Image (cartoon, rainbow, N blue to C red; front, side, top):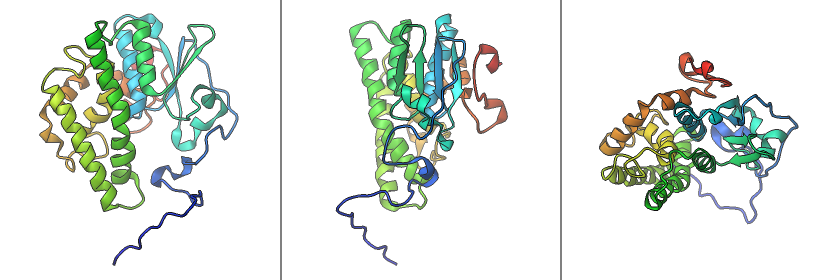
Length: 279
């Protein structure tokens, strides 16, 4: 039976919930829905997040900085339950008017600096601590190329392919085909780059790898959208090598556990306030 052709109205209005699993938190306006002050811990860096691919970028970098001995990178990681709309509290919106995790407040300076958007947070921390961002102009530029590539590319993987393949209330052939094609094109972009160098920015591990790995590294390792077979990820051998190398890093393993509330119980650390929380 042929499906009726959708004709867009002259003026779009929000008449019914949409978005599948995320329908309860999707809305066409910004701003807070309720008043709530965010908690404040003892460390200079206050992170409010959830262990999604975007969220773990920041905890991985913080754990990597701590592993290098940067005590100023100590942080409190507070859980934001996005399924319950906690990102719409007045306190969270003060840090991130876009109401998306992760959000970070740096209280080591006065006045405190708010940071939102994961790429912005990674760049800020890399510059603050002088790590994971090459200092030579060519290396810095290449690293930032791939950092910002991820910012532009991942919405097609997550909000595009991931949404229609894994979360949409019904399976639709056109959007799944459209975004599967784009996801595979992006994997090929990465595979060609990683055939040339061990890491995205060149010879050294950087914030580019930290940004890209939770999305594309986890995709080829079979940990994202259960789509590894569908996308034939075994074809991207250089991405596979890179993904497994990064997965072995102790700081990466620690960072993935922070603000995680699902999966194996041993992998869950809902909030992190000191290193012992990850023991």
